[in-house]
Length: 146
Image 1 (tube, rainbow, N blue to C red):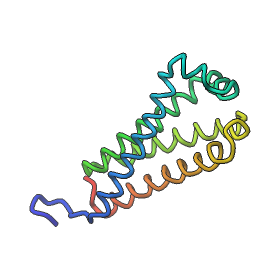
Image 2 (image 1 turned 135 degrees about the horizontal axis):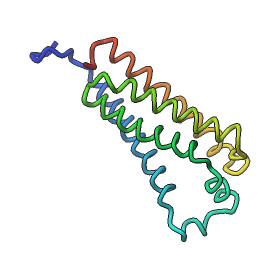
Image 3 (image 1 turned 90 degrees about the vertical axis):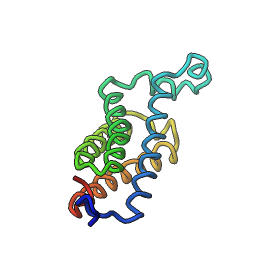
């Protein structure tokens, strides 16, 4: 314990939390770049990719927003050692699962993006989302979050 009554966390906790925040900030940048894409960039995209983006329903876009902003906020909660980080990361994971479920089962994204962008990257995102929920649960159980 430290003098302020909080349990001292190991250095690796801070490293994981910072790396997770950076990961989620990259996701937020991807969301913003898609949401505010200029007409010039849209014109340069292959027609199939543009069609996927234009046909994305509002609920899938909302899931994307919950996924990335929940991830950013949840990781900030981890860095601030707040117990609300866990439910926020759960919301982020739900957003990820909805977004990726839409992509995998309701579109031809795998065909359009290929194996790496259409399968491997979404699986990595899901695994990291699950990992962050488990990480926050473990931190909460160990008394690292209050």
